[in-house]
Image (cartoon, rainbow, N blue to C red; front, side):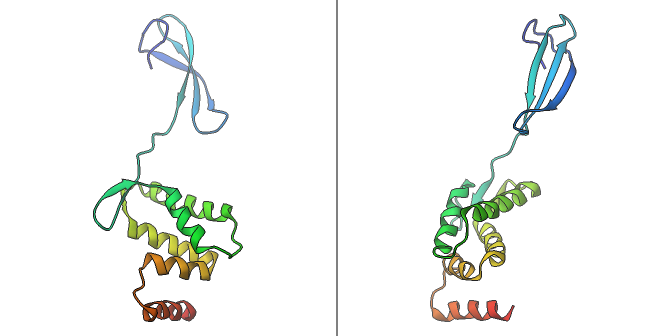
Length: 150
């Protein structure tokens, strides 16, 4: 860390603690050459998460797209938005914890379905009908039968 006073690259940490929002570490440093004290903040650098679409194109992860799909699937189902937000948080967290830089849209859809099944079965079927792109009533019926067998 370079001293803002004299430009020396040697300093020692005098005090270290989490910042007010707990999103960074606040460090008080003292320059080894001139004794000037200054504060630095260290934050975790997050790599962008890329989603690989079915056609091979890539775009950055957009939680609002997932939220729009979940809101459509949960219309008239009395599921709070906060619960849907937590669901998306857990998916994003899992992906970041795995350290993947790219994930397929199919994998994200599967993760949403898995978590949605625990929240509401009707919303699950609604989301699955769009995500799996059911072509006819037979595919829809098969999904309902597999759901009722569980």
